[in-house]
Image 1 (cartoon, rainbow, N blue to C red):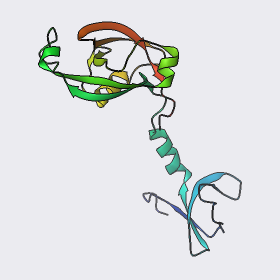
Image 2 (image 1 turned 45 degrees about the vertical axis):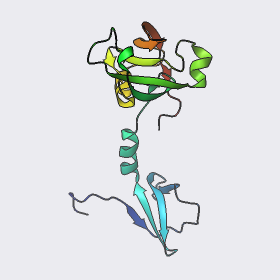
Image 3 (image 1 turned 90 degrees about the vertical axis):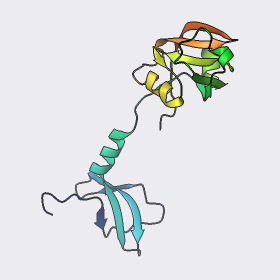
Length: 165
């Protein structure tokens, strides 16, 4: 192969049985060089090179944190905007609390409206993820929310996201 050629798959004549996809492709020295992907016509198999798989794995998100809540972006009614900056026309409504948050902390409730987390205005799920991006597990973050029509400020602990992928 030329030095500038990139191999995106490995073609081999290794006999694979149905169900072998996802298994390792080994070289003669016993080193993993790929992951078996599919069979063509019974005598031709295609594998993904381990270098490609390694790059994919490196791009997966690592440990991430969460507040342990289910949210829905909402527009704040005029009556709820009193005392808030004019730019705060929306927030995220907590519509569910995950069991791990209920078991460890009793600080957030269904019906609370998150306005800020760690100094970042929270108007969408993406904004909440951005606010949490640099946080660590069990880190206590300042939160501003609407509860019962009143602005409340508190610190809440982050939780480890159990299934980040």
